[in-house]
Image (cartoon, rainbow, N blue to C red; front, side, top):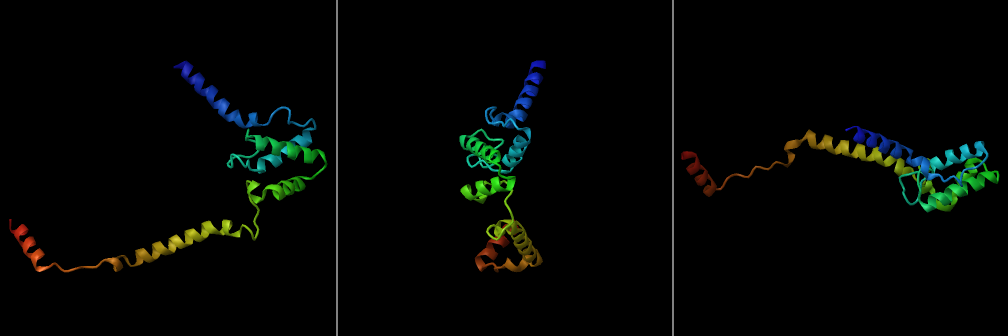
Length: 153
């Protein structure tokens, strides 16, 4: 039992440390301030291969290339915004994990509320008049006779 618990704890530590493994030691900048800025920027950029991870968390080759690109731009003297703008200009808004609010993606921001409103409206209309779709069709003479026979038994 003790070995099982030890193995589970080790597995948890491994899973929790997985994002730390993504950044290779040869990518890390010697300047701690620039490295911290690179980490902040990388945490906000989406891995285009994994699509649900930041490039800081992903070990895909493209994510590595983007991490190196971010660090190179920072070493060249770009600001955080300039680095992000450069990456977005090359890969589009999709590369941002938290997309900006703009006219291009306005529907993406409004759609959830719009769908919720439409669903609530449909539910209100349906619940307000539930008998609207019920149609009663009278029994035919044959059906009445069969029903009477069944009830008499």
